[in-house]
Image (tube, rainbow, N blue to C red):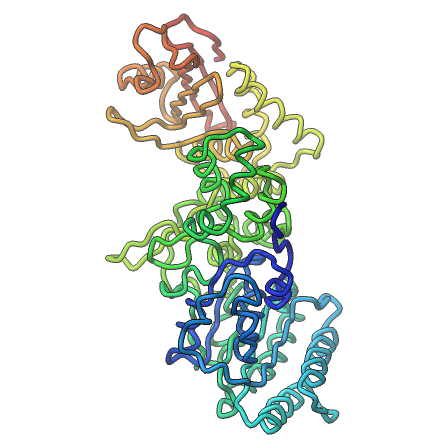
Length: 541
């Protein structure tokens, strides 16, 4: 019988009481709550398990030990650690559900409802007052009733700010209101055993966090890099039956399948240490669909604001990977001078892929194939002014051309794509055009690699399908003849050849393609495609 996957379930008690699969994070949580940190903040992308983490913390501070022992299924790590299981009043506020586009009254309505719900849970009454005063009352009375300090857990603290980030006046009103509300946590520190805030972004210290300067930011702390998300080890240990079910249905080799999983869903990294994790939402839905590789996480929420911000700031959309940022850049979140790059990281569309200790710089890139292809498609739809029907036709034509060994049709489709890029973001650099082509191929989910290093040199772009290998050499201030000559002289296709097989490797036909860019028309100019060891296949001046 298939096991129960916790699809969309963020309540720890419900997971444990109903025998859903739970990836045990309690040893890492114990390290957090048993240390010197008593007030902390964690930023992670949406649908990354933040709410479940908040729920688990709440259950621990409420002393609900039975949820962690064998009565809840497999005993969890914290059950055998030295935790006193003292019952503290737990105040959990969740700002995720509000419709904040309605204005400041919507924020006060959400806060009032959350405080009222928590007061009923604590069996206390709140007197009529502003929300900050009611927050103080709630903390005071909860501590007085139990005789213990309280744990305050606030999930998605920044949801009102993110909902109004493109509306400066509304954003300012939300920020001022939340600054005073969250400031209660600093002034009432003596009443509090533990404070935990989560969100997608951390707005700058001159903003909402100015009164919360005692918070310890865990976002880039290597000790908690896997506090949310699923590591490769956790995946293989906790989901063996689900992996076996996919292998049985799809008749795949285990090693090949696990490599596909890593490429498509893994890759999120949240510290300078090389620890990567899967997004839980995507991987759970993948198993639920018995192994279908679809962009579950990406499709659960569109990055419309980010794409718009990128367009407004005229950011080079074709060089979003390999961005270098510093620690300070991760704190640049405010309505004035908002930068797209750190928001892309905090939102999960880019992630850390390397760290340069000498320069103290993080390198950002797309985390995996799901995000790379899906985000490229969103960028294309923003920048290319083609109707949806025409856009879909172009993408279908391009994939079909590569699949059927027709480079002439592929380059025709690429020329149409490039013709739709606004002229004011065009850069007269060879790498720009090369990256434009790479982005188009990536959006379509093709097996595309650029700047491919081999023993004899570096290939501009390589596309590989089931039956064909396409080797591209691009020239901005050069000719097609020079491009093809470089492919030949550097023997770029040698690793893909098998001796005595007329330029084919394992039945694959090899193409070498020279492309000359026309900077006047901002597009492909002359190009020529040849099958390896054959006469000219196609040519266009």
